[in-house]
Length: 216
Image (cartoon, rainbow, N blue to C red; front, side):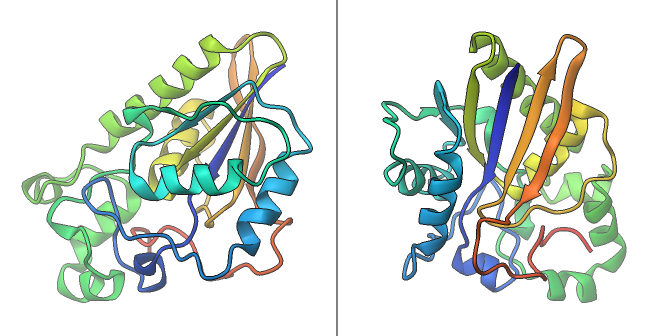
């Protein structure tokens, strides 16, 4: 069976500050302690990967490099796919969740529900249906390139991965993803299914309040 292993990037300063961090912004990874990357690499080494992909956004690419360099199996190439990039939050990039809930509570609720709204469009927030479709398109492209029983490793982002996995599997009950979490999709003839979601058991330290900042 083909399987897709989807990793959310490591923690950034903006993650700590609860700021919206989409396709139009990038805060560098916090790399003072690389223990989590080592633990993730050790977990992933229990599987074999024929291909590795990443969003082109720096924090995802850097996560891919930090993890794969610590894996024992040789990883020759990290392929960048633009359709794996995070949602775009337009003029709200860099704003904190707390300030947006106070300033524009109704509009933030629409963002949180991933429901398109003229007010969100006006400030440059990406259309959620289009974003979901592009992410699923990337998963389909990756799946098509795999041989039978091969695995692909994918480094992406919290918001778009949650939205995209919902679209790919039809499972609408998936919560926010934690930094350095692993979600595994199995591929059947009739489509994708969730085998593992938001796995972090290999990490010694997990922020229980961590999730998608753009969701209430």
